[in-house]
Length: 396
Image 1 (cartoon, one colour):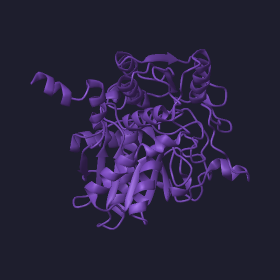
Image 2: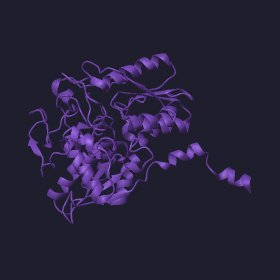
Image 3: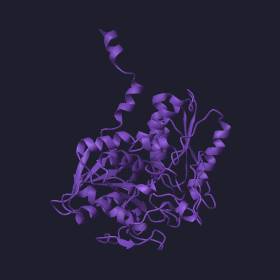
Image 4: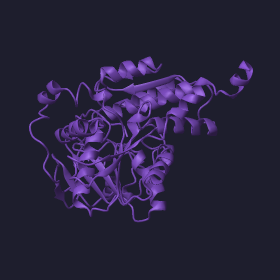
């Protein structure tokens, strides 16, 4: 009998991947939207490490299937945290050592957690002169790969597997909601906004995709500036961002995201970090202003645990001026992404690829772990998720 049980029980490592996906869906209403109105939030924080468990596992599995990642070879990648958790999980499942390159902005708690999961954490000490911490990390990845000739880099910013990883998430949303009119996603690498919207638009051709970025991010054509929020935004141009798929983009400031995170916590017991707050703020406004029967889905990439020392720390928030006032009831509006430098919640219905706007020549995807820094980019604290070529996206 014991032998029979052993035969049908999957190995512990393979069973780990079964923990990812089929995350809960929660209806969000007051105080972000009035009673009787609201939006549906996909709670990706219920994955073991957050939304990027999906691409972490998928990119590794596809690379192994193609032979790009040899058995036992080292995985080396740049991360601001969340993808690192997904890659640590994938390395554990498939037997690969993992090296994660990050910067001093990574929370100590996240460093300790990644180390506990068996990953090596490599921290760059200086930002790149034009590409900031993000490019400095990617340059370090290149040097580490030269030291490990059989190593493999997922290159989440440009890897199309980063977007296709979100097909199951899209199908979960379609099954749970039956119909979706508006999808709201944060943008860092561009992966989940591209991957989810591509699948949903095949099912619902009139789907509206709303992107949510942070101030100081260069993804949609703003100048790169130092950024407090991690997990969305970028100081480089990820080629996974599906610019042609977006109907509009909103930029959100840190204080506005903090307010939304805390409002969610006190009203719904389901909240998260910077990306969750920014997405909730925008989705709540859409629920207030669109027709009452509009079905809005929003992706919440993570939970609150990582942000206990930032978003949910009164001293930290006070020191950064994040508790001064609630956000405005509606965003400012600009006609073009480069109309002015944005410093508060702002909306723009004109979305284009900043690289194509500056050059008549199409920009090819960069297959190396480097990306193009924005003009005049200054040191920032980094990102995690971005988009792909249309009709895909950008993670972040």
